[in-house]
Length: 517
Ligand code: HEM
Image (tube, rainbow, N blue to C red; front, side):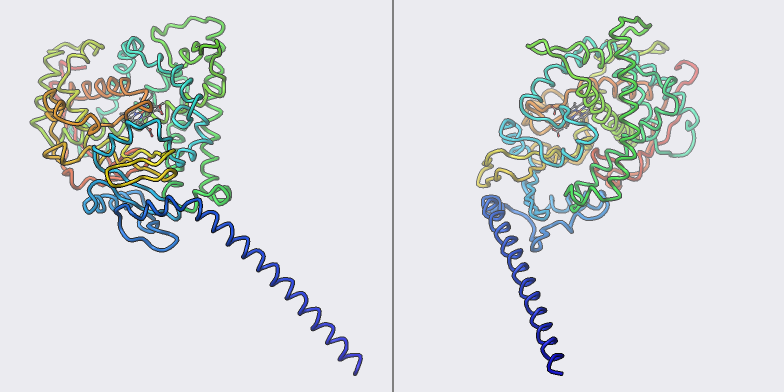
């Protein structure tokens, strides 16, 4: 009995000792967590202090405004729109511990983009890294400057001139594909446009004919679209921003699946092209490919781009150029379908250039379509394909009485800047005359930034304008467009590009069929 009591006392003592050990360990962990948190908060004191002085809605402790933007992209976009009615120039939002400052007006956009050396791309661009590597869309500093310099000559106007007939060929193919929809019901033109721009980019950048790629071209198009979506989901699903969580997520598996389509295909096509470039093989092609320009490029030290760099840049061109041009044409057709007077004026301009001729469009024709250019610019104003850009200040930036702290995220809301009422008297009205030279002169150049501005401006803007002109001119030579969904009922969603969730719904009616091919 006595022995039993002694044993149980010993046992209790051991449990007490173990418990004490656990409590000590737990206290140590808690102290460590507390120290880390204090250090973290101490480092962020500037962001917290300056952020608290910026205008914005009231958020919750710890999660901030994260819940406001949780859900589908169209819901987040709607929320943004509501907030921008309340806060006209600038909004501070906390997504967890990260301060996001949304810029809505031309005045502050000018200060940020003019100071472009005081900002770098925001950390959200890193979500593209496993796909696009360290391409010029993502990289910073010396690497960015060198590679942008090496890539820019490929977009020279002399090259673009030669692309016009490639664009024209695919525009004619598009018209043939649209034949089945002509004189029928309203339909979504997005899938037709998306394939066309993908084929054009594959052919002008890599020299790949759709016939040779066959079903791979469709897989590639789908993979590019899905990878863009994956990156976007990491932006608004806050927990997936953390690599430690993302690594084990379903989204990562989806991303891997599509990377396995895009990477090997790009590598294969580049390798084949490089072989024939190095062998000096001649082909029937009369225009220079982006990729040949990338092979040729040399820096001051005589160094060219590595195979990895070429692959990253090629994939970036496909990503940055395809969806942006697709939605530009989609929105332009939707708007023209709603505004028959503007469409008539544009068609008159096109008919003046071509008359009854069936000839294909050339570069000089594109220069003779100034009203078309105004229509495209006004479309970009109302529906900029890239609706917002993320920057991170590397030093505090002063905007009147507000200070944007170093390390916060700046989101330049291009779509709102383009509708700044101090710059556009009727900001929500589709009026291509906004781009008459005398009106442009009256505005800040930063009130229209579809391609950004400063040293990070889009490399493909002239390419995009030319391609969109060719596609629109060809469609309007053959068809009259009508559309019934009014602008305020467009269901907008900002993924990486701005889209209509309800589709680019239009009707096509054939024009004088016998004269136009
Ligand atoms: C309507 C069509 C287009 C629009 C609205 C557009 C818009 C933009 C914008 C806003 C940026 C800046 C992004 C940022 O800083 O976050 C950008 C960058 C870029 N775009 Fe475009 N883009 C278009 C077409 C193209 C095309 C056709 C290409 C290439 C074939 C292209 C290639 C690039 C590249 C490589 C960058 C990165 C430039 C840099 O960071 O210096 N874009 N684009």
